Length: 405
Image (cartoon, one colour):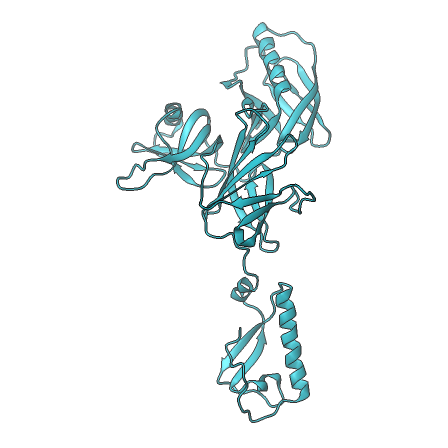
């Protein structure tokens, strides 16, 4: 470890026992510090320097060893990072869940992004839920942290130089269970094609469309197929006339998959396919911090896959979940709404829904009844930046809300 001879050569002064003891003490301290994973002071070696008589350094001829504070490069070397192995890579395993086994498939890329698919094996299809985001390795614990925006982060512990990943609980601690908690590295990367709600900054210019995803920061080309035309039309109508190509915030349901490159001679690349366009919000960028589920006033924008407009004589349909109690309040468009809810991770269920008994026009009352019926079917929730998606057990979006200004 030292740039110095390990065997002392003849020296003009003999070290005293005190000098030897000091050197042994320094060496023991370094060994203990390295064994504990603590950055010890670095050893500065000055070839050709002479050491004072009766000093620890005089044990090494023509080499002076002095103590100095650790530099940034020393500290980076002191604790080698936990290895994940070569990236990109994929891990997979069947882990226990409340309703049966869940197959986890995780893709990690070297740019710090991840893709995750959780397939609930005991449920009928569609039973897979996809997520994307950014990952990091904690410097102290070595834990792998999957940041999923508005949802709680997931923690895993790399094992055996990345040959496996151990699932940790929501606080990042080991799971006390005899059940399997390991994801095993696949022989080669096998990235999924995630299908999920997405928000990003979309731009179109010179017959080329692209989007920068809010969840990962990645810029992807956008395929001009499926639901793309509705997105392009909304963008062209909202784009400032004097700023062609201006990025605008959009929300959509999309698929990230391989498509041929638009550049001749280039290999296929990851591309966004718009399955359905949801909304465009001029004048806003990707939110820096996701909004909390509880304590935010959510205003209904979509019901059963269709945009919602408040009928004449009605009020905006809103929902608020109390941050202190398991109670909800809101408006159904005519009557005040109240009830309770239970929450466990990404699962949610509304109960004891009730409302006042005011009378409104038939269109308002019909929409309010559809709203109430949809709330009773909700089993999952997801926040996509400023939007709340309430879904049924299969993952189908029943209600789409936007945070009220």
